[in-house]
Image (cartoon, rainbow, N blue to C red; front, top):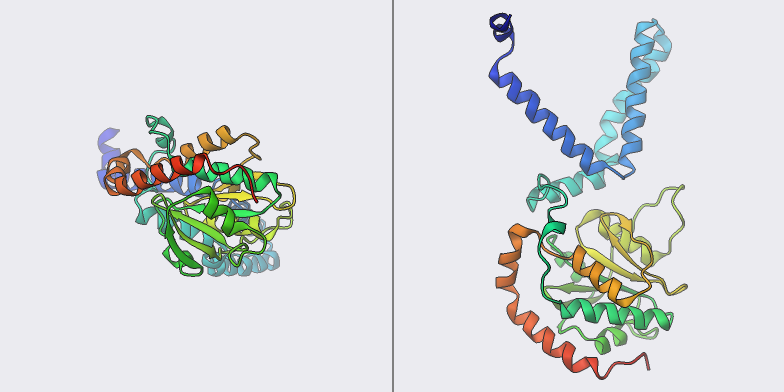
Length: 292
């Protein structure tokens, strides 16, 4: 029996099946929790109805379904554009086949004073009902986003961030980009998310945060101008509102921790920026108590 089976099934066939199964698994992980799941289910329903119509010799229905399936196949690249872009970006930075959850198992890093400054600023803005949008760059480069605003390349401090987000500031309506521990740019424009009818209505600031988080791995801190709620946008989703400063610091440290294989390399690149950031944060701790 085994000899007969070996005549029809070769080693290359087994490798082909295993590789295809792994690819399908990671594709399902990629689209999990996105609107692509509902679209994929709709396409599968059309294929199922097409099979039933062919089995029952329903020629008219079968012809209509074939036209719909062909049209769906042609437009699939347009419909799945955000998911395809995210998949190609993950492949480019080597993150598609990384085991999920690996970052959470990494040892704790020293307290990041930049994150502390961002968290303190967020709560100062929240208490005074001033809106804010702060983007923390991760592995995906945000150079084209920075070019839409005003380049600063400044050390992060509560005073600077409060001045940027003041209601009458020219940079108030845009986003602040934090890159490698420095405020790279302010007043930047972010891509807006395309919201479905079933999703809760969001303001422009929240739509911008959601849109950038869908296209990149950036972590976006959003302060609502209407309610003062502080949320984190990441991977196309919002966290629950955060009501404690220390909890916000811990959450930001957790979601901005670099992968284990990149941690050592990042520590070699950023020591000077972080050292300067630490000194600036220490000097500003005793000066900032609220918005003037």
